[in-house]
Length: 180
Picture 1 (cartoon, rainbow, N blue to C red):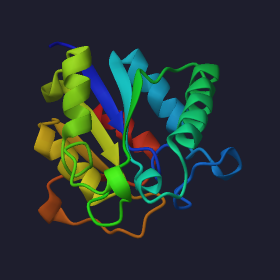
Picture 2: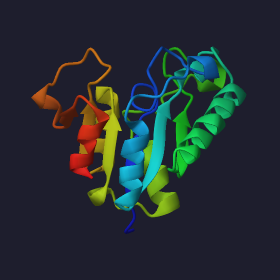
Picture 3: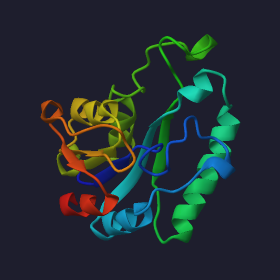
Picture 4: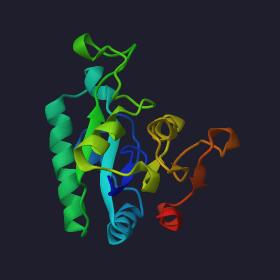
């Protein structure tokens, strides 16, 4: 385990969170995301997306819809000179999920399941890794997994810095470069 990783939440960090984004026409990249990822790769990080997708579990859209948008998103990253190593998602919700998706699954943030899967599959060294999220549940997932640096991105959020969560705060994605 010697590979460091940059873990990114999707909605709110990679794209503007318009609520259950699954259509291409609703997907708007957050300013600075490509520059951040290029810098991370230049610094030796693999990039992973870890995203709760309760919209699947709630029946708002299908896995096929999610896969189609994810494929396009990853192609856009390649076109911008960067690479997402893998996208992990959790379609579950413990109270609002339908059918098989109504469960408290280890993969759903704030649990560390998606991060742990990346560790197993790619040999990630969490003591050298960074996570960027826009919700406290993202930060908790990183902390629960043992990610060294957890950063709450407040650029498009109504959250305010709160020292009790034990994370760093940034208002632009450019500020994340300081932690890489």
